[in-house]
Amino acid sequence: MKLFKYTLTLLIFLNTLLAIGAPRYHPEAARLYDVGLRALTHGEQEKAQTALEKAVALDASLADAHCVLGLIYKGAEEIHAAAEAFRRATIADENYIEAYYELADVLLIHLGDTAQAAQVLQKVVAIDVHHARARTLLGIAYFRDNLTDAAISELQHAIKLDPTSLTARYTLGTAFLQQEAWQSAINTFKELIEIDPFHVKAYFSLGTAYRRIGKIELAQKSLQRFEVLSIEEEQMTHLKRFVQRNSNNSDAWYRLGRIQLKRQLWHEATQSLERSVALAPQETRGYEALGYVHFQQQNYPQAKAMYEKVIAHKPNVATYRNSLGGIYLMLEAHTEAIAQYQIAVELEPNEPRFYLNLSKAYELAGAKSEAEKTYKEYERLTSKSTSQ
Image (cartoon, rainbow, N blue to C red):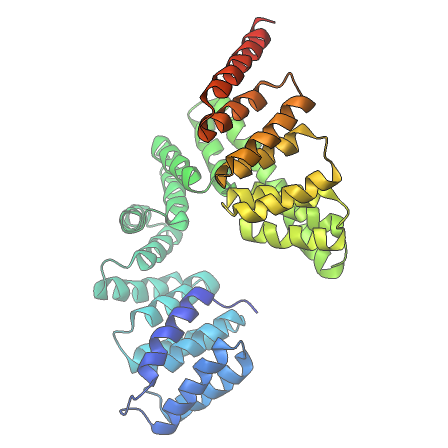
């Protein structure tokens, strides 16, 4: 079941403090509330739900218990029950901002009731004018009701409060498209892509805007990127389903990990690739990909271990030696880096970048004359390739 873990964890942390020694609540209800929170921290969702339901039956004024129950129902896709729980939380505490926000989210996103959602969100921003998520949702509600100017105003405000909000930026760009404010839409989608270079819908919308102002080449470029990312998403979805049914298929885990790697989903890629190498320890490709992931995350000791496994299987591949040399440099193991770059140069004596990297390693190691000599060889090879 999908829970809204961040919000739930935050509530558990804050509300556990409230639950301890809160004499104004029914003592047994307070105890059950505490039992429910502790059960949640141990992943015992059914036990938590039962305890919290008993708690609110004994004491309806436990606003926090209603709100946590709402999150549980929401995660279990019991949407109407979630809405009712959040409503009861707001009745118990008329200034409970997060309960209002969650209620509005259920009304707008899951039940499609834009009018009620807007009313609830207006209450949230009246209590807290700096609530970026509420202003984003309110902008979406206005947009869905064709109140485009109001939507743009709210979404711009939301972005000022939280410049990282992808939802606010995408909806704002779509609102500009609806107004045929093509350049504003283009600027908004470009800013969104700078934050998230893998936002599929943003590329499609950007391509649409470019096409409307006659910039066909830029439109085609954006739409091609949209197509590539769409295919990757379909492949990821297919592979995730496949490995659920065929968990011992090393190739499927590897292919899933490679796509996740391309998407810079480092944690997910690590998990997939680790499954792949565990199932096929004799294949080097998984170790190589894992080495790259660890390097990108600056986990240099782990990256080193992966490339050492690759080289143990394929000692005569220059690019692997070069990669391991780069890892040693990051670990400030200059002597070891020099040794790897020297092997790379021996294996591919006409590759300029290996000489450049070797010269850097010499320089960091304090071998100035060797660094200069190697750099001259790099210049010779690059000038030779340019003149050809």
